[in-house]
Structure formats: structure tokens, C-alpha cells
Image (cartoon, rainbow, N blue to C red; front, side, top):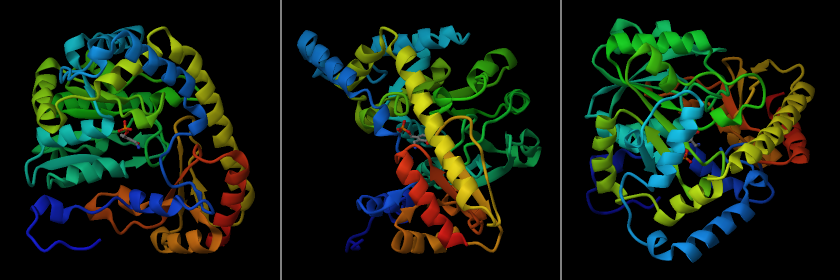
Amino acid sequence: MNSVSFPLSKRATGATSSVIREILKVTERPDVISFAGGLPSPEGFPHDQIKAAYDTVLTQQPKVALQYSPTEGYRPLREWIVSDFKTRGVDIGVDNVLIVSGSQQALDLIGKLFIDEGSKVVLESPSYLGAIQSFNQFAPTYATIPTDEQGLIPDGLTDEIAKDARFIYALPNFQNPTGRTLKLERRIALVKRCAALNLPLIEDDPYGELRFEGEALPGLYALSQQHGGTVIRMGSFSKVLAPGMRIGYIIAPEAIISKMVQLKQATDLHTSTITQMAVYETIKNGFLDTHLPQVRELYKRQCTYMLEALDEHFKGIDVQWTRPTGGMFIWLTFNEQVNTTELLPRAVEEQKVAYVPGQPFYPLAEKTITNHLRLSFVTVPEAKIRQGVAGLSQIFK
Ligand code: PMP
């Protein structure tokens, strides 16, 4: 990027473009098969229903849809979320719900709410790159707790790590980047531990609805209603409808929602009125009950194709990978000599395949870990999955 000749804020000077965004630029080239972006499959976008919903909203309520609206969000949509959670046994009221412009905005608001320069933030390691990038704006220090096949290890939240921490950020379902899911005993242990420490627990769950195998586990917010503590839950319509609509939500105690409303007001006044109304119009009569099973079926097929392609083409290579039961990602672990960051340009130039190196998913202190990569199995169709995985294997042979 060209540099500017006048002083910028420390925040802007320190900001770097996300590696994912840089890679997405390359992957706009039609000759590159990209497993890099966290892009949901466009085959799962219900465009006819969404078009009809915008039409209805603009025909029936144009003056409301095109007007400013409350920061808290469109009330019928918030009420829908309340009743959706009731069906899962979670008891919330409309004042516990704030609609945001994608859950990425929720991350920004969490940062604004909790982080002063130097504040300690606890992450699981690795963690969602977009969260790290968002929190980095507020210059925190990080502490991490380790993860294994079953997700983060609650015992890793020691007194020392928790000391003076502002919050812990956790991804219980089909984690981005590893695709791993936190098992039930650990969910309970984590919620209880955070309650005992009086440490806010941020639950980011955009992929929970994309389970294509096995039983859904109770979320951390739901568990906090039994076991105590403060959980702030972030949800999103990006993966269940379409990410371009940019509609997400936060569920939290009323006092936290009120503070976040003030912070959001300063950021964007409110999330798009017309789009909130269109989302509500699309889902209000149980649309997701028929739509989601189709998306899950599609993602299951795509995941199976990729796992089969990995089994076939990565045979004989010193590597292991996760076998997710939902979500969008598979995480590959090579031996420690392999540097996936350095190999990426070769993968793109020689084999026309892109992935996301593991490195940026680790917060600052662990940036030396280079032997992982993330593949999305949902973005490209079957034939290209096979072709892309075959090409990728050539780089690691
Ligand atoms: N959290 C996680 C873990 C994600 O993977 C993503 C999207 N990649 C987001 C939040 C942001 O999603 P959105 O803003 O589209 O709701």
C-alpha cells in the first residue's frame, strides 16, 4: 500500500490487512481453486426467498424499511431470536438481544467494551483470526489456553492466566480454524470456572447450526443459566442465510446490552433496517426448518469429498487432519519443519490452489507456529475439491 504523508493514529498505523483478505484478492482469479476464504457455499443461498422478502417489505412497509430505526434492532427479529432460544430451553427476553451488522461487529463492540491498552484477553490457541484482528485494534496483551482434539482445555485457565483478564473468547462449535467442537464436560467445566473467577466468557457460535453429524450440544450461554457466570453469546445469519446481508446478534445480560447499544450508536447508529426486516420476513414462518437440513446435507457431502481426497492424495505425507462433524473447515497439521506460510505462494503459482496458513490464527506470542493450514470444504464444488487437493499434495510431497 502507498504510505500517507501525514500522521495517522497509532491504531491505524498498527493495523495490518488480514492475510485472508490478501489471499482472497488472489483467489478472485478464475484459474485459482481457493480453499482459503471462509465463504459459505453460494449454492446454499436462498436467493428467491430473500428476493421475495425484500419485495414484500418494500411493498408493504416501505416507509419503515427505508427509515432510520432503533440501535437495538428490529423488534420482531429480536423477538424471533428470543422464541428460537426458548425452543432450545434458553430463557431470554427481548432486552437481552442486540442486532449487529454481522458478528464481526460484535467482536469490535466486545473490544470497545472491555479492552484498554494493555488489558489482558484470554484466547484459545489457535483462535479465529478475525477476532484477533479486531481485538488488536485496542492493543491488548494476550494469554492463551491450549486446545486438543476436543477443543480448549478448561484446566488451562489457571489462576495466573485468569488474573486481571478482561474476558475469555471461545468458539465451542466447529471452531474456526480447526473445525473442532468443545465436548460437553469441558463446556460445563469452562462455564463453572469462569463463573468462579467472575470472568466474562464470550461465546462465538456462527457454525453451531451447521452440524451434519451427531447431536447438538448445549451452548455456553445456555449452560450459564444452570451454572452461573456471565456469558455473552454472538450469533450470525451469515452461515444460515447469506453473509452479504451482514446480520448478526449478541445475547447478553441487559446491563451489557445497554452499554453495547451506546457503543454501537457511535459506530453505525443501527444495522440496516431493510435488511433486518428482510431477514425476519424470510425466516418468520419456519423457513429455516426446511432450509437448514439442505445446507447441512450439502456441507456433509462437501466435507466427505474433501476428506476422501485428502485420504487419497496425502497418503505417505507426514500430516494429520481434523474430521469435523459440522461447520466449514478442516485443519491440517504437518511436522514442525514444514512452513505453510512460505509454501503458500508456491501452491498458488505452481498448483493454482490457495489455503490459509495456520500462523495468523495464533496471537502474537505464538506466531512461530508454522506447520498448520486451514481448508474450507464448502466454497468450491466437488470436482474442484478433488483437483485442488491433488494439486496441493504435490507441494507437500
Ligand atoms: N466469528 C467467526 C468464528 C467467524 O468464522 C466469522 C466469519 N468468518 C465471524 C465471526 C464473522 O461473521 P459475520 O460477521 O459474517 O457474522
